[in-house]
Length: 91
Image 1: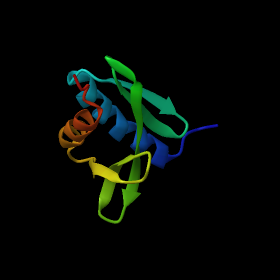
Image 2 (image 1 turned 180 degrees about the vertical axis):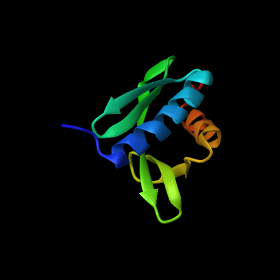
Image 3 (image 1 turned 120 degrees about the horizontal axis):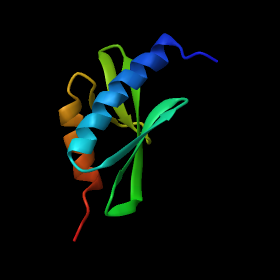
C-alpha cells in the first residue's frame, strides 16, 4: 500500500520535529502508519507522548495525542521547546 501525499507531508514535518527533539536530548521514534512521533525523555521512559501532524485552514500543525495543538509546523524548534517542557525530567 503506497503512502498518500498527505502522509508524505506529515512524515516530512514530523521528521523536522524529530531532529529538533533529538538535538534537545529526547528520543523521537517515527511510526509510519499513520505517521506520528513517539517522544520520550531517556531518563523517564515511562513518561512518553505521541505527537502527530494535522492540516487545518491556517496551515499544518503539530498536535498532542489528546488533540491540543502544540504549534505550527513552520516552527519545529518552538514546538520542540514546548514538548521538552512537558516531558522534562523532574528531580
